[in-house]
Length: 212
Length: 303
Image (cartoon, rainbow over the protein chains, first blue to last red):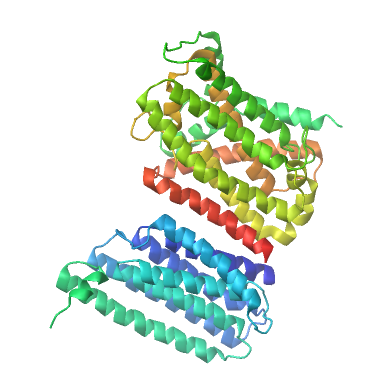
């Protein structure tokens, strides 16, 4: 089954690149949803013995990460009527290059981490790469919605990392993380809505001009 | 030495002009038109070969030899690929760099010819063409590096021949990434949507077409034929990487190659039907993505 999980992890990295390279907000959200679906399939691919925990985790991840949150975000862009990320702080080509560097770095770092052996050697580097890409998106994009997606990607990285330690950390932790993110996105959604209402714009740079 | 490498090479060289036709046909069918006949380019080549060439008084020898250098470079590059899945007609250690270099030489000759016409219009086209090349060539070499790492062989005959077939199962993810990267390069190097639109003659959007605007008669025929062969070579690279044919009988492998080329041409047509061409400033990003895919494949292998 490692072959299948390797393929899934590879697609997770490709989804990272997809998020970095695209200008359209709806395409960014679709990439995050696609990544969520991959992550849902991942525990099932990693632990072939189908236990109720694993199926529950898979289904829960699928529902939250690739159905509920993307639908919520798509609705947010429809209501805010923004379509494109216009002025990222770092351009798309540059952020793709940064992403490639991130992947290279995480493969280099993962080899040196004193972690117990997991099922597939790809798990930790992919987790780190996804984390860093999430961070890049979170810090370099100016639209609040893209930043929410960056936050989701970052959390996906944490989730993959959690999978590598799945024997030691009970799945409850992962479920807790899912809940965290759900709340986080909910709050961000409210923030997005308010920024839009007050300033007719979705740029978080406007927040620096808040006065009482 | 058996006859198959020569027969396959001959078949590919003869079939090459059909590939753009297949792409155009696929595009036309999907967009609800009838389109030009599939074998249109053969007719065009025959017509152009019979005509005389017109040379501007501004042009020099550079302009006249460029089509010859281009065609010769592409043909010699074809000799280096193991088209029947086993052996190329000739090969040596490190010939992958020669392969990339021969293709680059052809492009260089064409770019010089474009500048030689003294037209600012063609100068603009050459500038764009070179921009595309500057991003495409590193990605091509990275993709070939993937093959070197997988097979441990430094010649195209080894990289794409039998050793690839044995190494395929272990390195499938990397090879699929390299194949995808090579396909993106195929679109870029052959001036296809989303990089360039072979159907347009609008000065704002042209890249490749504008350089060959001043070529006429047999010169234009050579340029068009070299373009078709280059398309076939990149197609052969993609097919060889994605479907290792080293285990098959050489004759079967050769037939598979021709079928694969037709499939790729049809796929290019489908892409042209469903996608718009990219804005000029997005093109580097497309090619950097191709390079990043190949880079990821290299990282997967180095770990």
